[in-house]
Amino acid sequence: MKEILRVAALIVTVSVVLWFINSKLNASGGPSAKGTLTVYNWGEFIDPDLLKQFEKETGIKVIYETFDTNEGMMAKIEQGGTSYDITMPSEYMVEMMAEKDLLLPINHNKLSNFKNIDPYFLDLPFDPGNTYSIPYFWGTVGIAFNPTLLEGQTFESWDNLWDPSLKQAVILVDSARETIGMGLNSLDYSLNTTDLDQLRKATDKLKTLSPNVKAVIGDEVTQLMVNGEAAVSLTWSGQAADMMSENEDIDYIVPKEGSNLWFDNIVIPRTAKNIEGAYAFINFMLDAKMAAQNADYVGYSTPNLAALDFMDPEVTSDERFYPDEEARNHLEVYKNLGLEMLGHYNELFLEFKMDMK
Amino acid sequence: MEKLSKLPKLYLSVVFIILYAPIFYLIFYSFNSGGGMSNFESFTLEHYTALFEDTRLISILINTIIVALLSALVSTAIGVLGALAIMFMRNRAMRNAVLSLNTILIVSPDVIIGASFLILFTLIGVKLGFASVLISHIAFSIPIVVIMVLPKLQEMSPSLIDAALDLGATKRDVLTRVIIPFIKPGIFAGFFLALTYSLDDFAVTFFVTGNGFSTLSVEIYSMARTGVTLTINALSGLIFFVTITLVLGYYAISRKTKAPHTGVKK
Image (tube, rainbow over all chains, first blue to last red; front, top):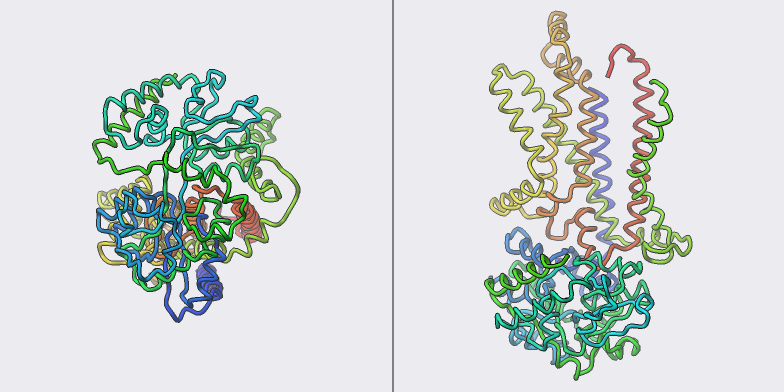
């Protein structure tokens, strides 16, 4: 009995000591006189140095937490019990959260750096007038490929994927909108089409791709491409940037017919407690220098026009990640098509997958 | 133990290689200066230094350990009392019912437990964070402790208690001097199992973390979108090393203390 009590006392002591160390660790971030700001962001989606600098400049202590899917994030906010001040949903999730009344409208007058954002990325269909959201990072959907495995085959059009030389070489992403969208794009249809006839044609065209399809998978594709186990894949530009930073042979293009334009956005959820702090944070992140530093760290494309001047020209002139105006005109943002239509997209995608041998 | 012949030895080593290879693969690449898990460039300790500079990750690690220690401690205390209660229940039907309810909690999927905790906490207004994680970890560890302690109690001969009472022991003495020392191995086993359950739990924790409080498993999982960095490899390597030291330490201590008590067999 004595021994058990001794062990119990030891555990309690260790816990208290650890607790003490932990509070010391957290306190070293800066004084917390001005309260705390809870930021809920994607994993590895901000330069941690910026958080420290923000704490130093404003005296607000940042509590930082990460999520891995839009849906998981929304569930936490919708359930309540949390008090996130800032979060970063993708564009379709902004629309959904706004519909569910989970977001606070943003007062643009409080954001002196709002003018830094490229007007091209403002006032888009998922959030007209940017009532609820400020674009944080953006990107495209395109083809990542490894020329060393392809005997010099190059890509400029979606139709190149149908080339007979690519037998069993193409990896598709396991997501209905992206894959069906590729079929739609290759036929010059809109990514947001609700025309059943066009969708049918796109699906039929996709089916003829099946001899070339190696696999339909999710995030594992990054590792396969980096290791040279796969030669061609349908990917998001951010993912392609990750691949390219680890394997310089890999290249990425946005096909000339066009593709999807996606965003991750800063929003203030209804659960926010420190609204002034949230505005200070957004304005800080919109500052040209900070946005540039953040884009350097994260590696995605920034919508901050003023930030581009502070970045490596080699990066900002790279048309694969910062396409010129002409190419941008072919990009389309997903619209919320409604449950029924999304169901139809999913059905067609399933039909395509079932058809593959 | 009997000497193993060649074939079983070979089989045993193959099984252990399969079990340990992924861990060593992970640790091996934590020394890679290449930045990825594909080709090994040269030896470096930079991921370990990066780990210690990342105060957020260290703080999450400490959170994880505190939650594990405290939840294991509290659940062991409650679990032992629960096992005693079940053991000394007079009514057989009642005892079986309580035991089954306990078992159901062990086999029911973590996701469901996690989701129901999330709903409960938001309903009664507990703020998600340290408290919610600790409470839920205690809750899912209790049944495990009960299951670990109960067989020890059943193993104990009732005459031990009768003898103690005959010799003038009070009820309190019986508990602290007879029962608890006898079931001590079960208590420690329950504690360590609860500890490991809490350390690596993802499903339940995922639902009840919030407001900036996070544990290691949830944090690593959120890194999936942009790729897990080699810092995580370094961290895994360290944890593996510490675990091995603990196991060896525990083994050494239990051997030393076991030697005099030759009478009681485990």
